[in-house]
Length: 444
Ligand code: SF4
Ligand code: SF4
Image (cartoon, rainbow, N blue to C red; front, side):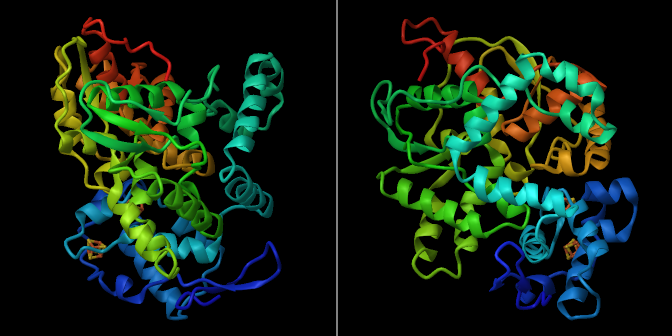
């Protein structure tokens, strides 16, 4: 395996594929100062250099120069990383650690046993690119959870599987299925925006997607939700699978650029960070490089967009004391920190209590809570301790992975408070105004 050229044996078709992955200048940007170490969740837990950003960069450098074998142990260090990118915020040299880690993972492929790797590749290449298949899996899971089968099966599972099963979210009654592809603005039109439905968001958080669309419309946006759009590919990219990810990116680029929108709005931080970086993902595709960069510039987190547009102040109250969890891929990946707080401050009755380490990872990190449950829960228990210190009645976390993780953490470690998406609260505030406009119960 050659990390400098990224050439490796790819197993699924038995063919050898060349992947341009590692950028040596990116690696060389690290001056090994160590200022990132104490910002790294895995280093804070282990105090081990190979579980720090600097240590991992050293390892990738050594492997790219042929000084060490990128073997299983190497892969364990690379995959124990949460990909939270807190090290990028801390780094004075501007090292883009996320790109280094993604490149290393692309060379390594998904982690785990051959069976675990096969399951992940199936999910990345067959399930995520097809919302129809994903929904069928969710229907099966819902049946398992509601039929009583889960109660019968759970005690028979081995401990590790039982723990993983306990982390599965409850599949709701309905999926996100908007009635029309284009929904008009409420009041004078200020913008025409596309909305990414998402894979996890459309299956597990239809209510949040609906709230996001209502909030955008109340802010004068004509909303376009193309039926043919798909998953953004973020989970693929973060786990070393770029073949399907590139195809997923091209599909969304074609669909949204063809819809004449002023912005593509995302309400999931991990998706937004990946979509903003489609230009990097497709940098070696001459047909898509420029379109991908244009798409990246159009992509906006919902809070970022509304703060830039100038949010219409909600008239209804939400009497609640909340604390805010900065999703890693919003705070570190997109540098969006003040805009969500501006929106929270616009809600009458709502009080924000800041949490120590609000931009520290909650341990969700895509599928990390399933692949690395011990580290994930160690990080989560610390996060819940910080939530507890605030005394807040609820947590706001505008990202599906964080919402699921914090809900699980509340049940396991306490405090068991509700976890809202920011769009939920804005939607409630507009709906509570009693203006006679369509309320926030309206199904989109
Ligand atoms: S990644 Fe940045 S902060 Fe960390 S050791 Fe390298 S230069 Fe220093
Ligand atoms: S991305 Fe997060 S877990 Fe990974 S090295 Fe950087 S700070 Fe540590």
